[in-house]
Image (cartoon, rainbow, N blue to C red):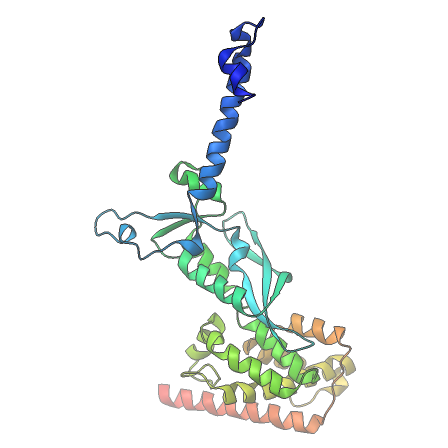
Length: 317
């Protein structure tokens, strides 16, 4: 080789010892190349790890699979809907790691992809990283060095808390509400999107919270129901229209419930009011339809909640 030959055989007129620095430099480059190649080829992405491999399931001192992800934001994809077409999207959120090791999720989207695949893949990775059979780092270098690395592996509980804080259902439900209240896409398109979303929505922390509140009927109860979800969405449309009227017209526009009560009800249902308001402002939408009809829906919901609360008190008594 034109570089190695003079370093090994020497150069006429130059003492070989003078070439020692070149030999050291070439050796160092070789080690760097060897390490880089090993780091690329010797470790697996979390997605590629087979946690059912027998070596990770031994009875005595089982191994743990060193692996990596490209940062915590790989877990932060959520389902959403396109405001112009109603198409299912995957939306990535920016995440910041705080000094105490916890995470803060930013409101703004970092990236957006067509289809639900990225969000569903992120959910699978989030579940997998919590498995005690893996030791996952945020770089391939950390995974390659593993226990010798100065980087700490991701903590399962911290990632669980991060995932619980993601708007896994809230973003899509809010988008469906915006599409329904504005009528920017056909109603059938919204229904088709919700039909596809429902099985995934039922696995989210929001659905778990709604199911745990036995005093309240909801779309999340039992195996889930699309008609129940559509009925709930109709109520949320009435509440959002009334909230926008009250906020726009002031105290003189207050109907059967206050703006604070409307906001609390929408938030309890998983609606991201900041996201909804930003979308409605961008679309320059103003409330339409019969206000009396909206009041009828809202009053009906209020009475139903009172009945459920009274029934719960009677049972406890």
